[in-house]
Image (cartoon, rainbow, N blue to C red; front, side, top):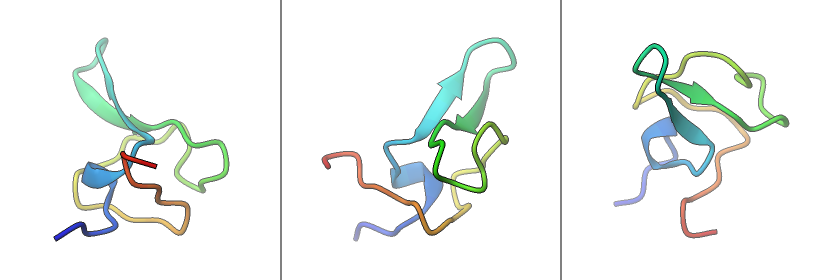
Length: 49
């Protein structure tokens, strides 16, 4: 099952400095925000796209 959550989004990137996850999609309201695996937004894109 491919749920449209941050954990399956190509824009959900690991940030080495704080060892957390951040949104790097400039079209998302969550851009540059810390994101959790189960967070969501309307700009989700699958990893394989």
